[in-house]
Image (cartoon, rainbow, N blue to C red; front, side, top):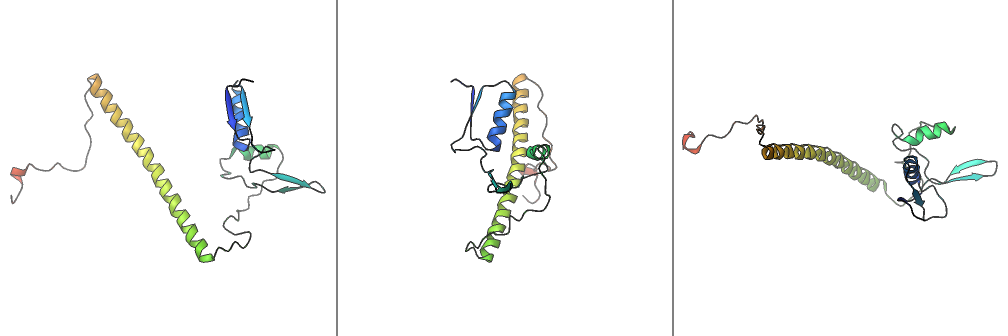
Length: 162
């Protein structure tokens, strides 16, 4: 069998990627290593047709998660209760002080990640401006003058006290 695209993993993202590619006319094969599809999502039906989520049970980033729309379309009840992710479900021999230190380190990491992300946008913007100047130089166009609020230093011979 010959396919154009192979998607590795039949979790939510893999299934969605396969559907999107197929909708755009691609021949797609979605591969899953487990004996079931769904990735982290795993719902077991108990006696009395009771659904028990043994895998993921939250829609992360629900304000922009496209699965929320699908869940509503399929008739699932959406609970808007805040998650209890920061509360341990079992005693993990992880002292409270160490948990607090870990949470602070995670918060600092995500703060740095956001700063780095913002810097990467600035760097890309600066790189674009540099490429634009190179193109202008190559094409014989006048180069834009850099703007600066700093005044240039005076020549050494006219500095006071020298």
